Length: 345
Image (cartoon, rainbow, N blue to C red):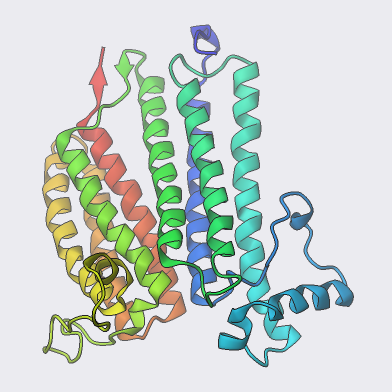
């Protein structure tokens, strides 16, 4: 599969396809955030890869789905007394989330097969594309494992599994964007080679990864509700560090399972991210002004949305926008890192 005829290669077309897949992944990340915010993620208690694409079509089917939901602990803990109409509203978001997942798998697999059969994939990219598809499959599997974690004992999904589910999606998004940029460079100049990840690009990605991880834990632990003030956590300008809300826990539990500590880390690690991205953007500016502007714009808007989300006690619209811009910030950082690592033969 790797020794394709150069005159058949279609790097520009494949790049455009990958950008479309990237847009779908950003969409599913946002819908996933809304699903968590509306406590909708456990509304569908079964995984039916093929038949699950068809939603309930009559009252009997809706009543059966609702009966399944009423059997899990979350119903009594959070949605006790919910009407069928209320159930339909939370079912909608989880259904759209799963439907998007199936759509992404189809939109990735079928064109990949088409390009391979027609020998249009440039040399060296076949296995990279297959690996990205496998990552998408892993992300879907993690999604079902995550849902199962909340169906029996817990009243919500396990926060660390939610983080793994989200970060796998974002890592896949990063790989797709990087590959699309490589292919675009090839389309412009056949002498270009795949970009390499520089030390600065890796460090920026690692620091952003920590922030994204804690953002996922914020959602999983509902830690955004810990405080509605900024910059202080218990008052406008007081108590920057509130201390743990749990006593006698291990350090690992405090760092990943205590809502107040998680909120504190996510709130202030953001400024470490900002400092790192300023350095990255200034370095990138000499090579690609557009990428530099994208990085600056994304982290500026993201900081403002983060503060607004906290101060409104996690308004759903602001929180969804915060998740959207977080994904766009990741794309801009991947773009900047790619600029630094571009090479020519």
